[in-house]
Image (cartoon, rainbow, N blue to C red):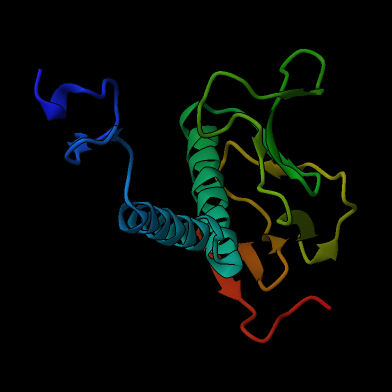
Amino acid sequence: MGSLGACRGLAPPCIQAPRARPVCGFTLVEILVVVAIIGISAGLAALVYDTDDRGVASREARRFAGALEHASARAQWRAEMIGVSADGDGWRFWRRSADSNRWLPFAGDDVLDAHRLPVGVVLTPLSFAGQQVPADAIVPLRASGRNDPFAFVLTSKNARIVLSADPLNRVTMQADTAYAQP
């Protein structure tokens, strides 16, 4: 073999100086280029991974608003009573059992299954029929479609969004742009 065949494996081709051992490996410039590329990639990945707190809160608020509207429509379509609760870490939809008049956890619908919020995002009930409600309250969505107005509040470090539903089951979101948690 010639002078280029002296090294084997993943190393770059070897260059053999006259009457010397073959020199195998990477040059300092090649190593610095690879380190620079890794550094730039890590910096970009950190920027992408570091999510915008307001964006996360807004996305979760839209997801919850959609689930509320879906649950209200489903209650009317199937003539069933559906409830919704928020425990701070997420939300859960409930179905009223016809025989025992108890609330049972909803299952079998991807939109209405229990949902956990990202860390740092909190959802709590705010009001129902103009009255404050306890944190463990289940807000009913009637089969008739005539519901009392209700509201939930979603908060994160830099965002506060109030989700309100009117008697016609339209959900609106109102963000408090001046909100920042101490």
